[in-house]
Each structure stands twice: as structure tokens, then as C-alpha cells.
Image 1 (spheres, helix red, strand yellow):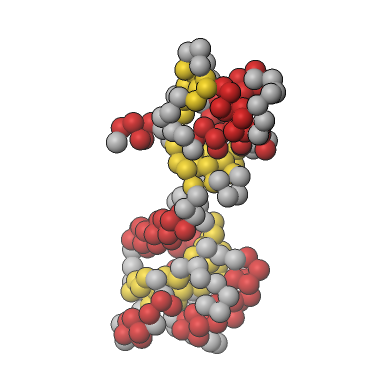
Image 2 (cartoon, helix red, strand yellow):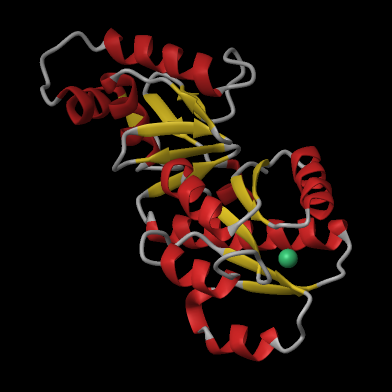
Length: 233
Ligand code: CA
């Protein structure tokens, strides 16, 4: 899992431990030793999650949260030693996403961070309704973007058009004429172009382009897009 995490904590030793655990887990953490520094860092660095201490020199965590919320909706995980803070945190409603009391085990903290990220990402994905997933890939029809995990796979406009056309008709055999008309928007071009594009796409998405899993050849007709997940279901 990846993500930029801002740790706002004035106890340097504790901040360093949290930093270490998060880095080891693949996250990209940064430390701010005061809320003021935290706001400045958040403004230009745009963290995806904030781990926030309440007792801080200068303005406290609650004040930070109020100001931070004016410009960011990133999840905030509050860490506090004052059990009396809990009521106030609960009263904040949507301001904080998680609360963890000190002392805590770094492992538990990392698990909570992961959970918050997962929730936030699931939500983002629901927002992006125009996303098609197959295997490790996600195809964003709006952004014209293909990703394998977090890695972007470059596609030309026509490669994208061809993949979009195939994935919009999963499990259905499509003849070359239909694909050509659908992607190139005319019916009198060179139909072998389709095969050329299918080969290019296979090189980008198939583990073994000669024995494709996703874009299957339908003998003497055309192609069919298979989504292994849908087959299983
Ligand atoms: Ca503190």
C-alpha cells in the first residue's frame, strides 16, 4: 500500500517510531513537530492521511483539524493521551476519521492506517463509476487511463479506444468489422488494423501474449474480451 502520511507529533521519539513503521509498510511519511508546521507542510505537500497528536506546542490538534478541513478532506487519525479528548473527538463528527489512544502499539497504528486508506480508496472507487476492473488492471473510461495496480500503462488513443470497445462487451464475441466500425468510426478501412492493435494490447496486458487470457481470438471471426473474475462468479 502507498500513500503520503503527515505525522503531527511533538514527541520526536514517538514520531520517529511511527515514521519507521509506516516507511517499512511502504507508506511515504513526513513529520511535523507542531500544528503550525503541519499546516504549512499540508498546504504544499497534500498528504493523503494525517496522524494527529492533540497536545502540541502552539495551536493544538483540534485547532489544526478545523483549519485543515477548510482545504482538505483527507482522513485524519487522532492520537491522544487525554482520555477526556475522546468526547470532544466524537463531537467533531466528520472532522476526524479515527481515534487511537496513547500509548499504542505501532503495529496497531499501522493496521488502523491501512484500514482508513482502504475505506477512503473504496469510496473513491465508488465515486469513479466509470471504472472497469480485470485482473490487476483498472480501466478508467473517463480519464482514458489504464493502470496495473498503481502503475500507469501508456496507451495510444486508438489502443485505448480498442480496449474500451472490447471491455464494454465482455464475454461477447465481436467480429472484426464491428470492432473496426466501433473504434475507427468507419466501415471501409483496412480491417487487418484491428489485429495489429489487438497484438499491441496483448503485449501490454497479457502475461503470455501468445496464449492470451483477456483478449481471446474467436476463430475466423474476431475477438472476445474475457474477465476472469466474471467467469468465476
Ligand atoms: Ca504531544
